[in-house]
Length: 226
Image (cartoon, helix red, strand yellow):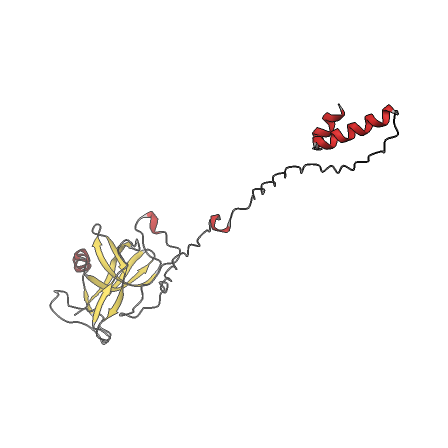
């Protein structure tokens, strides 16, 4: 049993045998033999190194894995033009007039009362005229050299209002369309009948200062276009 203990501790067999002989010699007592003292140094075998614990997984994703939300910049809305009022706009103004608060999703309806620089584009029957605001785009730097433009394609800005029974129509080309009847501002001066106005409006090429009062068109002053 003792030998086995030393063997497990890693003590060499020769050292164990020497110890056994010494013990036996001391026990017999027959001869006074010198006592042999053996010094045994037992070195415990090194324990295997424990594996280092694996680094704990971090709950915080790496910076590269973190999605970055890209900011979306909304396109700036184009500011509305001056509102329609009872003040007569410049015949060759370069900005489309606006009608704040008008709901264009509910179909065609009259613009607010006031004077609109616009184009009569169609007659829906003998009484109701459709019109749209227009602006003048200059060409070659001239004051009256250029062309009129309405709202861009897809824009729903349009109005429709009945012609008053006594509507005033001042033509810039005479009642037969062959003359030039204008003042110094290139505005029509020849008064023509309501029927002439209906015919001109139905062709869709009548540009004018359109006066609306009480939801009706009461005056149309044509703007001369060369």
